[in-house]
Image 1: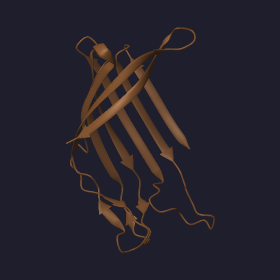
Image 2 (image 1 turned 45 degrees about the horizontal axis):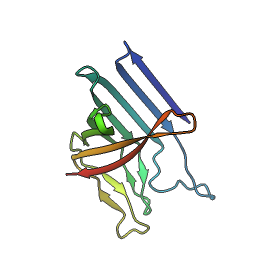
Image 3 (image 1 turned 90 degrees about the vertical axis):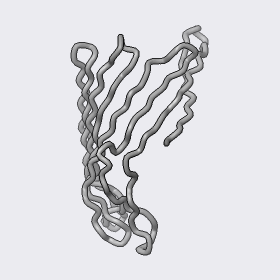
Image 4 (image 1 turned 30 degrees about the vertical axis):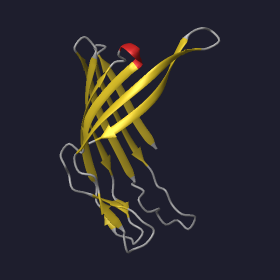
Length: 154
């Protein structure tokens, strides 16, 4: 079951939230490994500098997950922040951000055996994304933007 909410306020501030409840099981009823029962997201965005930039902040929460060995990995909450541009001349668009802003320590279930059952999740991660949108015309001569993306993390 998915619950979602999108709020636009004064045509500039945007707030989006979602909460998903799920139960993924094998045919015998056992819960699938690395399948959180709850996934939540919250994001707020505001345009700046005459709507040329957008600053967004958000959090993602993953509920408890089981490993293949049956160990329970606890909840994790991961904040992030993103700055992105509107499409620039030539069809370029730039975004940069920080994932796991709080540099939280957490573990993720991995592997198909008990020897390597969990691994440490990514710490604070910085990224830069450059996209190019090439205008194309369809039969009705309206332009479409088709994203072409190259991503570099550092």
